[in-house]
Length: 67
Image (cartoon, rainbow, N blue to C red; front, side, top):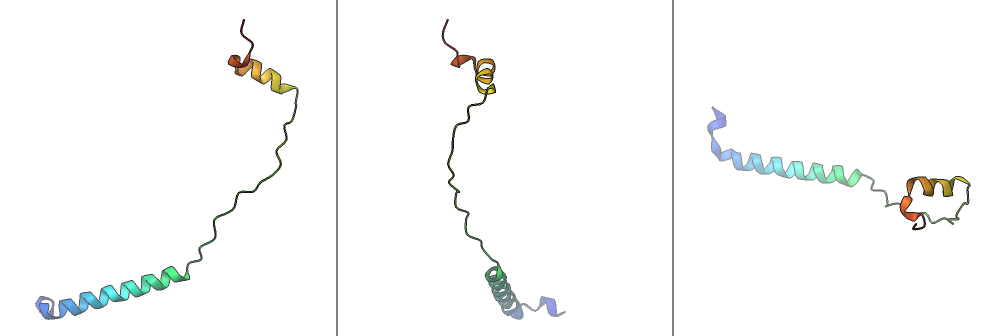
């Protein structure tokens, strides 16, 4: 039974590890890493809409004047 002959195990395991290492490196080198997106700065302007005051009065009672 050739499986029990341990003299070839070292060469077999070493060649397997080297092959996997090389294949893994090739696989990673083919991958495209996109650069991280930069934040887009835009002008912000406050819109005065009629419902803003009502919204604050109903849902933010701590902003009301003290009684």
